[in-house]
Length: 194
Image (tube, rainbow, N blue to C red; front, side, top):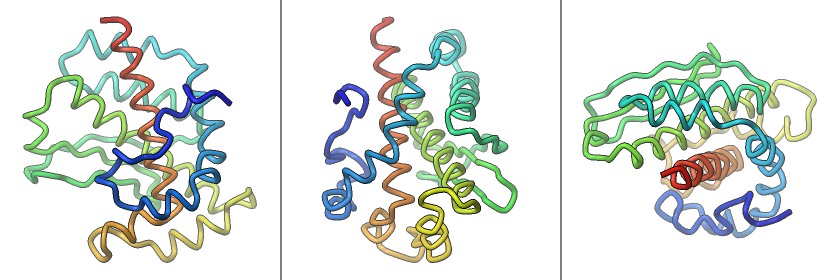
């Protein structure tokens, strides 16, 4: 496996450095879970995502193209919608009960440039899509189903636990790693075309 596919070997710049002890102990396992999906995405066609990034001022058409691509890669089909929030840091989420993803942008996002906002949104979409995949696995007899079921049933959110506890869950670290790699891959392609 070449290191170009998995962009961030140590996640040290990811998520304000929380969960790094957990990452260090489990990074090979996390990489092994995420790697096949990153490879599959890498080998898929990204032209719709890239062209829509350039064609539209709004990030949503490119985000929708990413959603479509990841739906195929992960073999899932959650509903996805966008909301605007007046919070500085709104929370996006995957809701298992109705198989939906809500991507929220906030007032702080207006200060980001187009590329930075796209990176943030692509990362969030990929992160939440991976949660949808994990929920699918948790309700099956697939490998990791027991782990995912346990973690979702004992989930530590940032509202009720410290950020280190939140990040020290396989479901979160895998989703963070997946989101980071997918968004970086797309932004690398955008950079190559500029």
